[in-house]
Image (cartoon, helix red, strand yellow):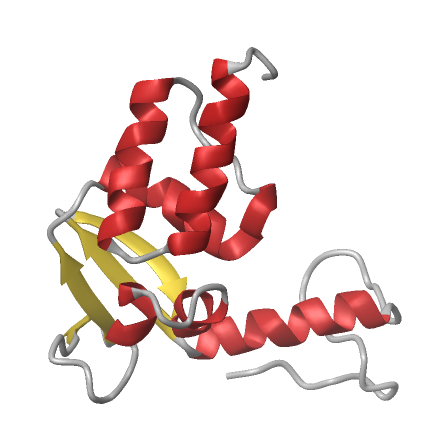
Length: 149
């Protein structure tokens, strides 16, 4: 059940400080969050659940394996966990958190340091066909080798 809007229509009776959403940036963020909430999915990566949205997987690299999983024509069909669409992927959950961060934040994502860690993420990005992430990782490795970190 959703709370009733106030007379102004932009605040409600929920506990906490009363604020009015006036910023168009904040309004867009709230709209995007509402879409994500309505498209919530679970990616079970080798037993570790990552809660995300179809929009996140479709947005940054639309030809990736993750984006293709979201298509109705995908041979990989989801099952339900607590009424949420769930996909199982037998891959590295340690690396997937960085992949998900990249899908959310693009080049502003936080990647692990060190050649071995970057190589592991690169391999996983290759599996998911995330070519832009692979390019980002290659640039990061070159900077690392040049001592520019």
